[in-house]
Length: 355
Image (cartoon, rainbow, N blue to C red; front, side):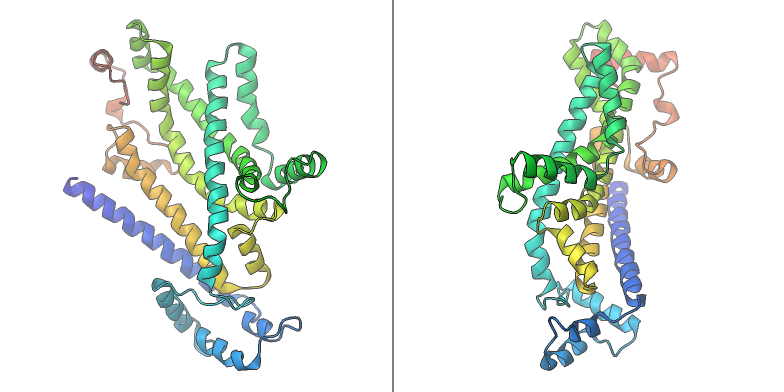
């Protein structure tokens, strides 16, 4: 790794840390400014009142007699040491509650991501290389139709049809892989249309590039050409997949409640309903950390997939095009005769335009 690359990586890590800190600070400020006193609500709860001998302990731990800035600095310092406080509704350590909920959400999100990849790739293949024009037209229309279906509606339909009517699973009694499969299918199907549309457009655009014509003229097999096309078309899709992680975490809140799963989504709902600010802060910190980490890894993977993209150029692309994939520089556009000759040489050596 060169000095410029090392500085880029360190800079991107610093940016990611700043985003996480700013997110935590903003949420803390919002929760601090909200009307009401969650500690007083927990103490005076008629159904589950907090014992008087613990009231002073709770008040002293959260330093409610100090200013908001002092409370923030104390809470941030404790968070750096892994101390996220205690739940205001259960009294348990927040880290322990979060650790118990994380495996459920992680398994659902991981399987949903795999479902989204399989569905997006399958529909994209049918949309671009289907056996007939009708099949290709139907495959291209599927993402537009499913894009308008919200996750909660699809989850309710799945529970009503496959659980209550057909009895294929039970939202209450099932455990193991079967308990994870159905929520993951719902989440995966919901996020797949975005990826499918971008990937289909990327394949269509890549198939018009000169290197594809060169490979066909050389007599390469359709499968070999397809692999080269996919490698070039996957770059914008990779960016969208990094954003899909946030959508999976957000969708898990609704899906876990409908499927009665005790994951981060259910934990977040209970925390918001009970004004359990320590739990809310930890959930926000986790989600923001996951989101910026995945985006950071995506930026670092780009040059490995396409060597034409330098880390410095990737920075310019992010500033200029926002969420879109990297745009080729003017020198990368194969328009002149000299560049076409380079394409022929690259194809003859078995390397395509994006290898």
